[in-house]
Image (cartoon, rainbow, N blue to C red; front, side, top):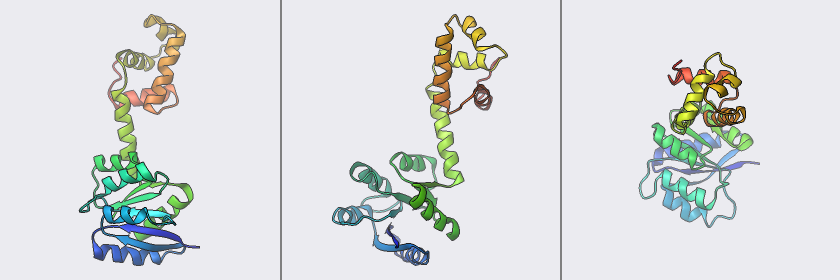
Length: 210
């Protein structure tokens, strides 16, 4: 049984070549090609059988990839979408991921990796290249830094010392329970799981002042 693929891309020659490539993969077949998001969304609403994956370009006339992704999130959030584009700026990548895109690929991707990405989205629900994964990781770390309070930052510095958590609590004139709360919130904010993780994060972001 083939997984139906829809292509949304305004470059006719590229779309035709992409169709031939996808159709050469076992288990995949291109069912439709649309030249912009408006054409795609108008047809998509009428389709009784939705595609397994939508391959979506970003820069298109009439309705671009970001607008299309926003529409899908609002109306068909379960639809699997792989961005396939030349746009490699971090802001666009992060916007697409936050809108629910299951993967973000550049058009210079190797055919074997492209084939693998399609299978991963079908089997695992998503696929991100190392470059995109690093972009997301760096963004999450930056957002974590933005949300750290002054007292949490003070705790983070003390956690980088040789003090025990009990000694940190005494130094900050706080209860051990409150210190435990600071620690757990920082674990969540900074996406780390241990005191060592806190120290490494602090060193990397130059907040280790002791």
